[in-house]
Amino acid sequence: MTAGATAVQGGRWRRAWAAIDERLGLSGLAYPVPAHANGIGYILGGITFFGFLILAVTGVWLAQFYSPTPSGARESIAYIMNTALFGDVIRGIHFWVANLVMATVLLHMGRVFVTGAYKRPREANWLIGVGLLGVTLGLIFTGTVLKWDQEGYEALQHNTEIGELLGGFGFWFTPEFTTTLPIVGRLYMAHVVILPALGTFLLIAHFLLVKRHGVSPLPAVADAAVEGTGPAPEKGGSTFTAHLVRMTGFGLLILAATAVLALVWPAGLGDRPNPAIEVTKPWWMFLPFYPLEDWWGLTALLWAPGILVVALILVPFVDRSPWRSPRRRKWVIVIGAIVAITLIALALYAGLTPPAAHVQEAAG
Image (tube, rainbow, N blue to C red):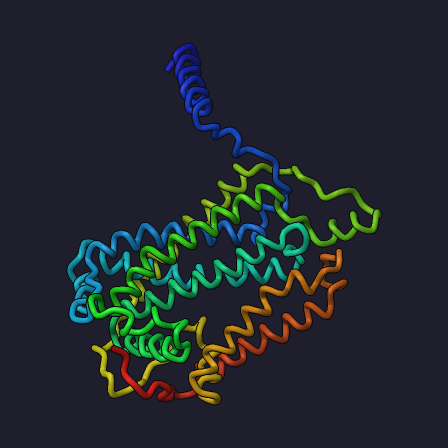
């Protein structure tokens, strides 16, 4: 191709881009962000978002073959694994990405906590993050039930028992709510409609607030600005488009890694439900509460997570100092570390002890 032809083609691309940008304003994505926004600690939220996109796409594919009824749920999973086009691989990707998303949500919240990024004016975004944590846990729990194997059935038993413990507040979680649709069908609706819709709303609000307040500054820089010993935190140094490219790169890496995991360690399917036994344990993100149920009964699954959620909600309102650096917030960091270590220790203890029967009545 001659230089003249290349210039003509380049001019066409520029005109096409200008026409698209005039209508969609894509160039607005190149707004400035701090250079540290491209560090792994500050890109965990973007990686989580990309993980949610993978879960949505793979979930839509899996939904084409799933039957949300007690008689057909497990058999449709077996069909996905053994017959549906790419079913086993896509289900494996869905399974492994769900685990990675849970991990990145926790790591992202941990980074925000350690760096004090929940402080004024970002309190609302912290609360949105707590909401997204709840949505993620809800998606994983309902996804477990939808397998309708022994593990899923025992999870549903807990769902039903907790609903009855809540009395009038838990009516939606019990089979008595309606006789026209089995509870597994309602949890399927929660998994594919209610929770994704709520998560989408929270994500949009989260992104708008990040755009409004900007990426949180590095703690040392923010503290120096408060003391007057350093300049105001930088608002530039990179662009959001560069951040987006880096986030997409990590997202594609996650997709590739989970595809390999799906081929090497496919997502399993347990035995058909047997209401007379209780022999499974929950996924790792629920394990810290498993010993509490051993020691204090099913009510521990209400008050323990409730206390933890309230504590998370109160974080930005209790820690109201202007300081961001962990060394200036030692008491907050120590309390957070104690809570984290306790949860990890409980999870390890639960993983090393044999399963115990907790629920006495079978779920309907």
